[in-house]
Length: 327
Image (tube, rainbow, N blue to C red; front, top):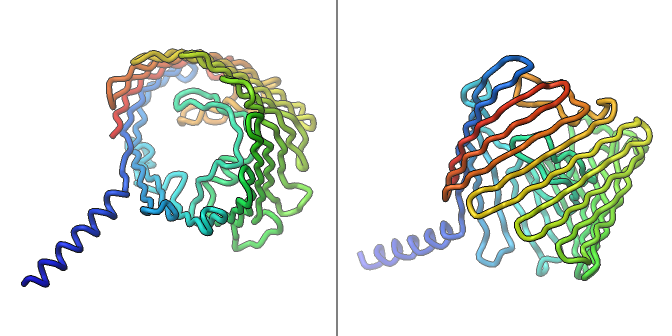
């Protein structure tokens, strides 16, 4: 009996240590949307759970996100959303190996998104859909301080050329900024997408990045952010020389203790970029040349109420009212 007691005590201590390093959080969100173009009024719900675990020595990590996108419609299954990965660090973090549905933003430069409005569309191409939210393996080497080099493998049964490979590299220069390179292969190497960027961080409260995106198409982009106390300002233009696409978006947000107010703007020259495709369902595929939006956030501990108003010259006027409770 004494040995059994000791064994149970040891198991309880071990289980406590394991679960102490595990995290579960998420939210439930309901969004009611009215659109003047279709004269429709719809409700969209989401339940999201974020799971995580990290070993005591911080060298082994697990992360996953599962969610039911909208149980009022057809997509009511609880499925993996965006990521479910494992990560192992070796040699004091000099080598990092990740596998699963990846979620890595080491080589990403992108504009600020909104959960409720059509911004967050300017990026270097080294983030979402390349090194994150894809199924594969990522091998990273960090040989010296500030340098991060990654090889991405996304094997496919079709074995279609170079599209199964990606490369990323970042070098941080203390008190100045960082150089970021990314590439995602295509079946033919010349159709691949690459980017080379420089982000300047040498002035307090200012972030300024410019970059080139090439091979399959050629263009330039910029991302400029300024923070002053409660005020945040962002301007993000992009120009593609091959397709003659010019797109620019702007965000101004003022955050107080329990209230935040945001104004948003976008311009899509000739509606060629398709950056304003409304994806909640009723307006999928429509695009705007010019778009305006406003958001007001009210926060009550773990609860949040959001009201948004949006107008696009193709998608019309819409109102959203959101309730969100996190845990």
